[in-house]
Every structure is written in structure tokens, then in C-alpha cells.
Amino acid sequence: MPFRPDMETSDYLEILRRRKWYILFSILLILFGASVYCVVSPEKYKSSTTILVIPQRVPEGYVRSTIGSRVDERLFTIWQQVMSRTRLLAVMEELDLYPEERKKFPAEAVVEMMRKTIDIQVVTGANSGGRRRDSGENAFSLTVTHRNARSAMLAASRLASFFIEENMRSREQQAAGTSEFLQSQLQSTKERLEAQEEKVKQYKLRFMGELPQQLQANLQILSRLQDQLRMNSDALRTAQDRKVFAEAQIGAFEAQWSASRAQAAASGGTEAGRPLTDPSIPMIDPLAEKKAQLAVLSMKYTDQYPEIRRLRGEISQLEKQQAEAYGNGGSAGTVAVGQPGRSLAGRLVSGSAPGSRERQEILRLRAQSTAIDSEIASLRKERVGIGKSIAEMEARVEKSPRREQEMVSLTRDYENLKASYDDLLKKKLDAEVSQNLEKRQKGEQFQIVDPAVLPQEPFTPNRPMVFGIAFASALLVGFGGAFGFELLNPTLRGRRDFQHFFQVPVLASIPIIRDTEYETRKNRQKTVIYSGLISFGALATAFLIVFGKKIHHLLLGMTG
Image 1 (cartoon, one colour):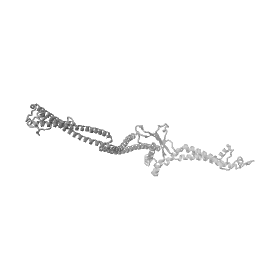
Image 2 (image 1 turned 30 degrees about the vertical axis):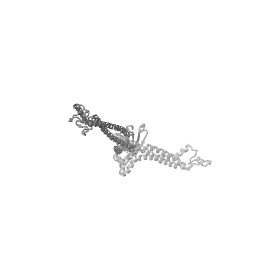
Image 3 (image 1 turned 90 degrees about the vertical axis):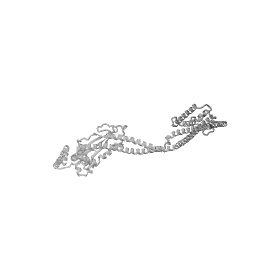
Image 4 (image 1 turned 45 degrees about the horizontal axis):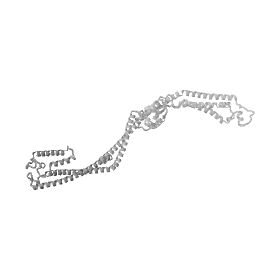
């Protein structure tokens, strides 16, 4: 019957009355199907455990961890390791999971079946108790679904322990691997650094004195040598002037002495019975000669020098001999013949020979000239040495810029290697501390905060939810279907329907004439049959709803 805009409540109730059996059967059938589903569907229990990620217990400012991966990255890696075929098969054998499936199906199929029952979810913001966690902490929940409640609990606990163990093992391996890598790099860098140090050492030994850091010292030495050269030049000029003066004096005294000898020769005088021109008379006084040698050596050495001490002893001995000669000699103007103890100097001093004063001065000046010659030779030799030293210092100074460039190249490589070695050494020490931190389990850890418990109710099927959905669906199908069938039925029922669609005045309507007794009997039989079916279905549905869990366990025990 098509719906009219002016339908009243009685019209809708009339539709429901006509479709009452459809509505009842639809509702009953859907509820019965839901009951059968709850009884037949296998029960699955879900057990969950929450694992908290505890950050490093020692502050990062004191010990810096060498584990650079984030929690989510490491969790994904551990998840892949835990979900591996080897681990899951070990859990199945340990807890005796899926015994029938392992007998019927290949291991890969059973492992894939178990993987589908395991789920992991990252929890952020609050822990299982609803309390806010500190910043930096994370947690994740591990859930295992199984048809046996105890097996689900044990599997969740075992997998959670795998996560904790694998996290500790992986962190220790990463810390140890980092430490070993830094050790190898440190050893390699140390060898290169030692080789570079040896190059720098050999270079410094090879060019000692020409190094850039010795330039200032070389310049100071060069300045001192130049001062010494100037002093040597001054001393040499002074010695040469003294020699010229001494030679001039010698010439003057020789002229006087020659005149005295000529006068003595004219008078026929002798010295102790010998003529003054006797060649055996020495022209040089040994005492004056020793003193001249002492003066030359005193300019170079101290009083403790052995040669100076020897000369002083000889000079003292000669002076003592002269003193004895003066004490034992004759009168002035005579010289005893045949007295070997008296020296020529004594005889000259005694005035026994003519021109003795001139001869004495000549001997002294010649000794002085000899000493000056020795001094000049020494100064010239010293000048040559100073010149060589100056040339050597100048060569060193000239080579300093080139050595500086060479040293820059060597020291740059050395400093780079030294900085790299120091940096690696610091990182190596930090890595060892981090490795010790992981061994002592003071680093980031996984800790179970909500252990897996034995589930009391099955996760699936969720009977209240199934019956709620079934009841809502039954009402929708029953009442909605009733109105739907009524809308699709073109039959006009009554005067108002006819007037609505045809706009024709109705003068009278003739009701349907039926066999009252036959119709009554037929309706009664239909009512009895439908009522019986509905009653049976209602009782069966109620029985399944009330005793569904027991029936399920009974069937599970019979099939097991």
C-alpha cells in the first residue's frame, strides 16, 4: 500500500499488525543467529603488558651516551628481531602454543598465524594509571591474543622479557662497537702521529741551528760575533801600532849600542876577557822572553792554566838566580871571568860592560816585539775563526725563511694529526665511560610497569556488543522491512486510499465476504504454528544467551 501524506497513527499500527509475523520472525531469527554465533565462534583472550622506556639515570652533562638511535628506531629494530621466525618458534615450543597447528601446517604458516595475534602500540602522554610521565619518557604496549587465557598471558610476558633483554644486549653491542671503532681509529691516528713526530724530529736534528725558532738566538749570536770582530780589529790595530813603536825604539837603542861598542872597541875593552863583539854573548834575555810568553798566554787563559803556572815557576827561578848573581858579584865596572853562575843579564845590570843599558833595553824591546808578534798572530787567527762563525751565522739566518716554510708544512700536518688524535682520545674515553654505563645498566632501559595478567573475559566474541548490534539490526530489519514491504505492495486498502489516488467520490464500499468459519480456523492454525515457532525460537535464543559460554566450553572440550 503506498503511503499517504495524511496517514495517522492507527494506519501505521495497522501496517505493523498486518506484518507482525514478519517482524517477530525477523527479530527472532537475527537474535537466534547472534546466539549461535556467540556459541560457535571461538573465544580469544587478550593479554597486554606496558613497558616504560626509562631514560638514562646519569645526567647527560656528566656521561654522554654513544647510543645515537632514537627510541622509536630502536623499538622498530627490536620488534623485527622479536618477531623473527626463530624467536617465535622458540616461544611456541617453550609455552606449547598452537600444538595442533604445528602438526598440521608448515612452520612458516604457524609463525605467520602467531604474528597476526601480536600487536604493539606506542603510548605517549600518560602511563597506564593515567599519571603524566616526565618529558623524555615513552612507553609502548604489547598485546597478545590467543584462544587460551593463560597462554596469552604467558606469551605476552615472554615477549616483553625479549624486548627488555634485546634492548640491553643491543645497547651494549652498540656501545662496545663504538668503543672498538674509536680504538682502531685512535691506534691508526697514533701511528701516523708518531711517524710525523719522527719526521719533525729528524728535520730538527738535520737542520739544527737553522730552525725558525732559533732565528732570534742566531741574530743575537751574530751581533756578538760582529762585536767581537770589531774588538779584534781594534786590538789588532793597537798591537800593530805597539809593534811599530817597539821597532822604532829598538832601532834607536841599537844605534846607541853601536856607538858604545865602537867607542869600546877603540879603547880595546873586553867583557870578562872577551871582546864585546864575541858572538857567544846572547842577545836575548831568557827572563824577558819568559815574561813575554806569560803576557801572551795571560791574555787567553786564567792563572790556573798549566802552561801559565809552569812559566810563572820558571820566571820565579830565573829571578832568584839573578838575585843571587847580584849578591855574589864584584865591584861595579868589573866582570869576573869563569863564573858560570852569573847570567848575561846580571853582567849587564852590574854595569861591567860598556853599552850594557842599551843592550838591556834592546833585549827587552825585542822580547816585547816577539810577544806582540805572537799576539798579532793570535788575533789574526781569532779573526779568521770569528769570520767563519759570522759566515756560518749569516748562512743560518739566510736559510731561516726556507726552513720556516718547510717547518710550516711539517707542523701543519703534525698539528692536524695531533688535534685529530686528541679528539679521538676524548671520544674514546667517553665511549668507554658510556660502555661501562651500559654494563652497569645505568643507561636507557625498558621496564615493565603493567605486567600481563590473566584475562577473565574473552576479547572475542564480545557477547554484549554482539547482542546489542543484533538487537538493533533486528529492530531495523523487522520494522523497516515491514514498512518497506508495505510500500512496495500496490494494494489499496480502504476508501481513503482509493480517494487519495483517484480523486473520485466514493458513495459506498463493499467489504470482503469470506467464509467466517473457514477463515477463523485457518487464522487460528496459522497463529498456533507461528506462535509455536516463535516460542521455540525465543526459548532457544534465551537458552543460548544464558548458557552460551557453558555450551561453548562443552563443545570445545568435546572437539579437543
